[in-house]
Length: 357
Image (cartoon, rainbow, N blue to C red; front, side, top):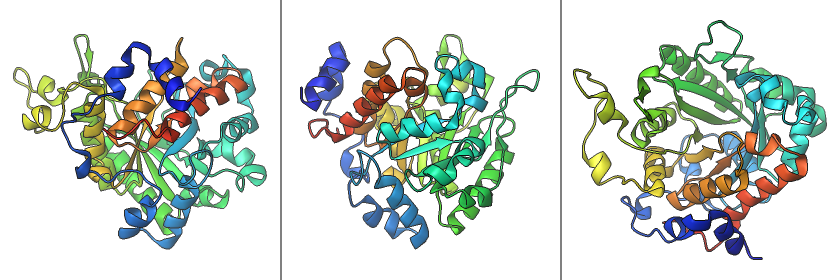
């Protein structure tokens, strides 16, 4: 069975809705799109040093998607972010860091993203075999009550010494602690760039006010798009963002006597629509029109993981995104099934019939 036939089967009833969409609000001609020459043509025109370009070359030049302009990354930092017991109970073999790296290798990923401890435990054996992306900050779940804050767990020099090609960090935009996180991460990314490493920013939103009634605007295109724009402002090379599911976050938060942010109605009428590809394209647009690559997260594991992962990949690719970073859907199952899921994601980016809308 060809790639496109498998993809259509996974999409089911949504196949035509997603694959035949051809009237995006923002034309692809406005964007810098992923391609084999992206590092030379886009990153290479910036102030990034040759060492950073080399690191980006390693990221984009590894695995099944090597030299396509797309990324498939395995992230396993959930042992801290979601607690180790809750994350690894479905498959306890991943308490062992080596199995995390083995999954990324067997899955032919561009890189493996994890904690200082996980990657440091096996760095001499694997750092030269697959690019390491060290996640430098995390939320921790033992403070009572739990709070939304990202704290540093190590140093940039430590990541460099273990052979990392890139570092990643999270900022909880909208949270009370976001000002400190922005300053910390901006400084850390500057040091990472000075040492020749690439940078990836998890541009997540955290504020209880973003949930109103039955709607969760943490997943709104306008709010996540602005988070992306803040992320590229501190010079993240790649932006990680959740796939948007709705729009109108600024409008909802400006109801009543509330005054929040700034908006223009054309954000919703001329720059986007309610189609998922348009919502994701608005995120790409806010990554300096695609000059920084957008990778969407895979989300939690469930009953239809491959179908959901393929759907997310199709939306991301057709919107002009740069790939997927999918963890729980891959490691919370037997390794062979995790490899199958990672390959299903990669098939979307290798499929010539799945085009930019």
